Length: 268
Image (cartoon, rainbow, N blue to C red; front, side):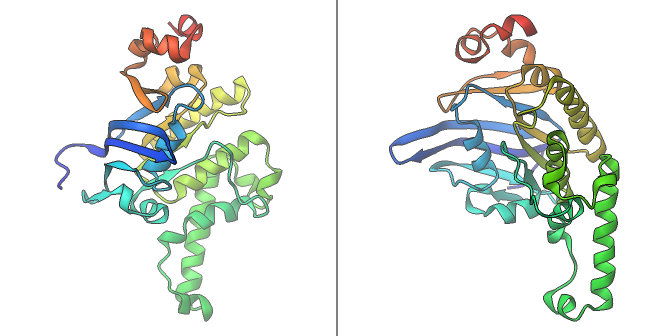
């Protein structure tokens, strides 16, 4: 299937069943290149389950997901493993930070560059000139990313010793290191104070512009969602109850009843 538009990912009526529980039912969406799209809804609505299907962690029970790589070739997400999808251009963060806590900041990012290495095990075993050159390139790329995100001064610190906000930032940097075309952010503002959330909003806008990347995020912070997302999809009990621009979503009666409540008044 050739990509004749700017379509990056298309989910077509995907569902997933765990035992007798239908966690997500007939979820469909299209994500275009360069979009900043939000997925919102109450706790337990199925948002992270959707992310897990889009990133290859879960296989849909029904439906299919198409993803177009940078060469315009289409791939069936549900038939590929997460590591393979990461090489194609899908990268993600997690609701609960999943850094390598006992590795340095620098090494956390270097690990994400593994798929871009041009050496084989023999080069590594014998420490060849090609291996040493490749190793230097990886370090330089890592340091450029850390400098870009202003955490290069802590590159030799253990990840677990970073403040919470910087751990979040490091996880995003690590996701970007694999050079994705689609970045999935699972509640990036979770646990942040208002100042950190405002800084995160600026960071996401910077990432989108600097890396020319498509972003899909899950978030409960309506200040962030309404402030940066161009389009929203709202889930409730595993089903889409609304989709559209933020201005329409915050006035939607079904969304107000299921999720926004009084917040709809604040952001209207």
